[in-house]
Image (cartoon, rainbow, N blue to C red):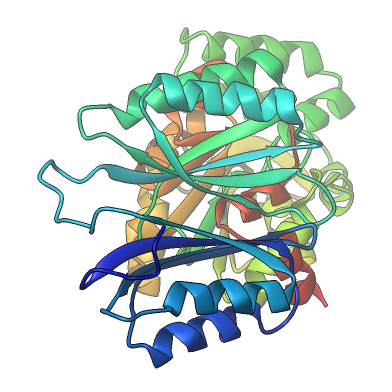
Length: 400
């Protein structure tokens, strides 16, 4: 290509090679001196290797490309350039932009091929890939543009089916917006979400009524009994149980993987947190104090003379009540619903997951996973932090 440029030529300059300080400064300095207009810039460094792209509009200036080539040679990098058509205002409707977050123990070519092949199948164009994990690809963020005629829900279902078929990694699809990284409230179920057990099942087992309680639970799961009635019947079977058994279980709740990291980071970043549980207040309040969670709302077991009466006090925390509590907490904190994350594992969590800006099904049954915005099965609860766009490096900084 000749170094004689026609007025206002648009050129894409691509720089590759070993990274070192001052490369971008030197090249942009040359462009600034000749009055070039910078239209776009992207830079990435992978394992010490730099790729820098500069889209510039050059004035009628002789020798600028030779000067760039000479500077690149001195800097020890390669520089290529090619004329491109000047950017024009798009005639077609702009595509919708989304972020695909892939999280697994280890993500190799096979896993990323499976994800990107499905993106291509749905017409999604990958604009940027960013590794969130530090040592190796264990969390990757893929920014995509989706044509307006393509349904994001259909793409979400495809990615969910992929994750469910492997169970070795999780895939989340979120619309890219101001609120994706601007969440301010996280509400969470307790039993089988924050903790690895169902407290009512443990109480029943300790009292010798485990099988009866399990049968009622099974009937409720199959839609043969509504949640409120199933809770009344199960709690009724605990009549006469010593309150000490409940308190002992509450004092030794086994935490789910990643819970402590998740809550520590959320607290340090100023998020509000709450437990919304169909379980029992003694356990929820113990967990709230142990982890430093801001609020806990759950069912209250009636106790008389140190024994459970087989009844609950106050409104039952069912699916509708959880959704109402989510809205109430958000309103009292001045937080938009788009800025709320809800996490749960069962049908009792469906309404609150639908009400939140981001509903996360955690190690849930297929029905809830399909209804939620995204699901986590392969990792721990701290995988939610990657959904916020936080990198391992940022997490280490927050945790000190």
